Each structure stands twice: as C-alpha cells, then as structure tokens.
Image (cartoon, rainbow, N blue to C red):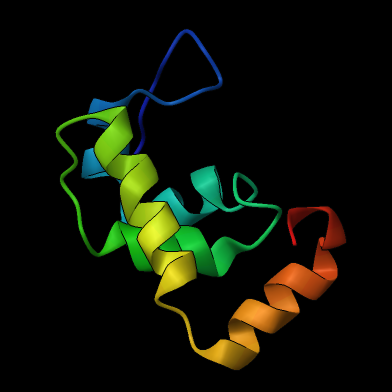
Length: 80
C-alpha cells in the first residue's frame, strides 16, 4: 500500500491502515529504537487517538517478557 502525505510523519488514520510491516517501520524507532514495541502495538489497531496508540506501546513494554524488558532497559540506562 502506498500512502502519500505532505509530511514525513504519518497521520493516525494512515497508521491505522498500514500493513503490519509498514506500521512497525514507521514507528520502530519511537520507543528507544525498539521496533518490537511497534510490532506488538500494531496488533491492537485501529487506534481511536494518539493517546490510545501511546498506551498500546507502553503496554507492549510493560507486558514483555522479563528478559526482553531487561535488554530494553540495559540498552537505554537513562530509562531505568
């Protein structure tokens, strides 16, 4: 699917209809360059708001296996 925008930042409506891979690519760097967060959040689309998207990404981090969370935090010590 090709989406054209006047900005390099996709809108929420565009994110909601992207393929799983495109969604993950578009948001993969948002959470400290951890694309697995966006991949997990993609499964909860469509999002009614940016806040709902943010909450889904937070839930992905909080719900991840302990080892993955530790790798995430160790890769970004300022978060812990």
